[in-house]
Length: 290
Ligand code: ATP
Image (cartoon, rainbow, N blue to C red; front, side):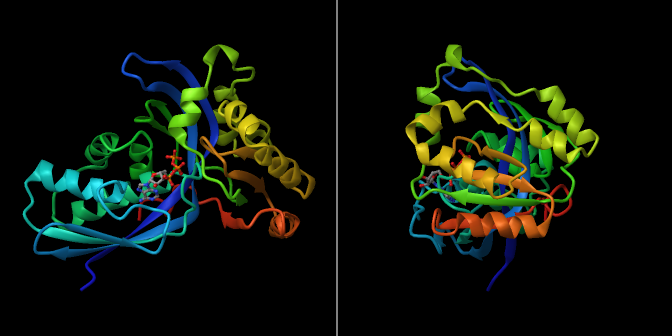
């Protein structure tokens, strides 16, 4: 019996800045994140006890290394729930891609179990639980568009970008977020995002301003290690990408375009160059929380 189905959308970073390394080993971040309409689907079925997990992807673990599994374990332990759950992840978001697929799956499980087991937790309480699982989980709980500060948990909502198309292109290799942060030398960062300018562009629904202010300091680590990311960016721009950036720690590159025809041209331009290419809509705040 299927009990609950939850959508787990991917996110992209419109800006990503790393401010400093903290004593606890984490970094203080400042980033603008937004959800896009590329989503996993999580089906949750109540069982008599335990946690089991299956997924349509061969690239994710199916045991307690899976963030969705850990989300269920956290809820069961924290609230002393004896019942169990079977988690079925229909995976559409590329794995280890900089799109927060695992974090979004975890957020979806938290939201789904909150409903299934009538826990009555607020979005803020779910986000706080999410932080125990990973830095991107709190944003994935709230969705929409927001500035994320601290480890990623201090969220300030923003207006979502105006309707547009997002082309996502994922090179064949994955990138480890931990390795990218480990290799980042803060004193060597050459160009940092202009957060105020991005916020202003979002408030004014200024598409060109958003495109002009896309910026991610992690490109300076990932691109030298994976030159294909630079080539993908160049190709996206050549075929009509109006704003092009690497998302998160990479290696996925996204391109924003206003018109559907341009989106098709960019997708065609990437054919034969990159196998995993998606054209999706900017999701904004409307459906992010369903
Ligand atoms: P972020 O943008 O938050 O850094 P990401 O998109 O780069 O994340 P994920 O797709 O979340 O990366 O996967 C990172 C690692 O987490 C993978 O190596 C994968 O094995 C593991 N993982 C655990 N649970 C999941 C899940 N539910 N979906 C995808 N990956 C998962």
